[in-house]
Image (cartoon, rainbow, N blue to C red; front, side, top):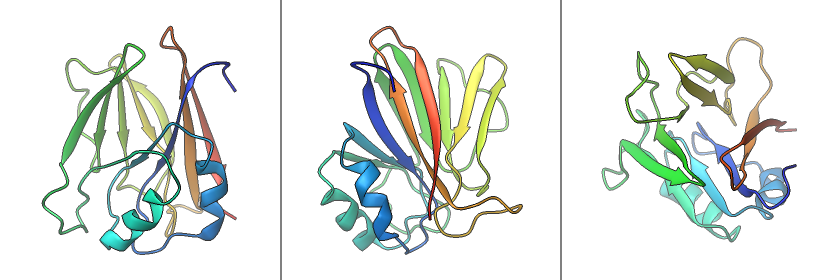
Length: 151
């Protein structure tokens, strides 16, 4: 854990299921970012009861067109792009791309941009366990990314 860092709970691909055990690690965060395929807005209603502000992007299984397809956020000088389906090449003006869709965890540098995927809450691929992540960004822009298994 980084002292005095901004703490963000990151999840994606809930597909209408929200395990109760996700609430505990999400209660001590500053923000919650959902990377799409929420499916039912009632899932977001439940996540909002956890207390932190929630940001969401539209997934290919979502039909709520009020949610943005892409969201650009800056936190402690780090420029983030939140999107469900990962771009095929690194976008300009972005330090970190957070995405879902593949149901596979990811922490990879591509063309100077860090690509992160917390995995899938409900239907992980390639034998990976269900997971979410905790993202911490300190005041100087240093990032810590930790996957949390969903048990």
